[in-house]
Image (cartoon, rainbow, N blue to C red):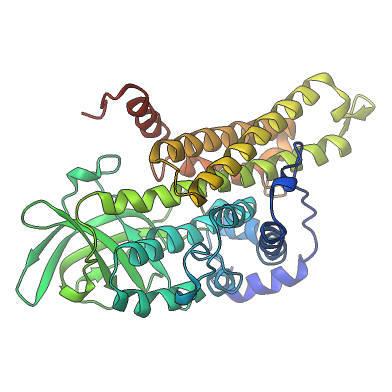
Length: 405
């Protein structure tokens, strides 16, 4: 399927998304009118631009290229960064709500925005020079330029301190060698924020641009998860990195780990969106599907499953809202973010699996979004810190003992 055919399909399938958000505890009352306007704007965009084509994108493993600029048009690239750089200047609850709505559409769509905003634009803003901010952020904010983030390596995922990508000081420039793996957006990225060690073993961040000699971005194929997302590698073969491309305001793993906290925060909201879509689908199906002479929603076991799903979704919604407040106050800790990411992704996986069972055989088809969400979440539970790694982060916070070493 071509990009042109996707656009034709988008027009033909318009108006078929009737999703309604569960809000059992009236959480909308805790939001400002601006929050609700932002959420509804992104929700309408997802219904119009994503829902009509996302299942075909997943079936054919195609990234919907037109969303790059569309996400910029609705302000989903780093909306929490200052307006002077072309961003939204919004609060963290607004950012979270946007990620919730994007992942309700698809985890891959939210990943595209999360990587761009939290892992590319955020470190350039936080650790870059003013010249770097002015050069890159405005074009990244609109989607004119797309970015990716290089930390994970083929042999070093949960232990980034053991990375082997290295830079050597050659006087006028640095020479970069190594490779990164499982990199969202890399196949089409114009810029990459990459982390590597210098001769002394100190981690530095740098900005690479497509076209640099020795930089390649091979695409990853045969994925069963995030099939509508573009995933690839970053390979560095004697790449000359100008010294002005080094992020000047950070040294060590603090840099990439700070970026991951921002991304994990967005994931904690996004996973709730995927869970809510599965729940909404299950509720609709239970009211329409009849067995033994009546809707299956009238049977106790189905009601039990729906009640449990709604309970866990509601708890996760409140967790996100409180964490958003802490983020806006500058009080959120990495451990608090880990708790939300770990809990909410695990909750979403459970909801997706339960909803799949409720739909029976129909639950595995592309006619419903549940299996797509379920398979996507198998990646979400792994990236930006695995389920177990976040458990150990919490364990260290509780006991003061480091179980990583």
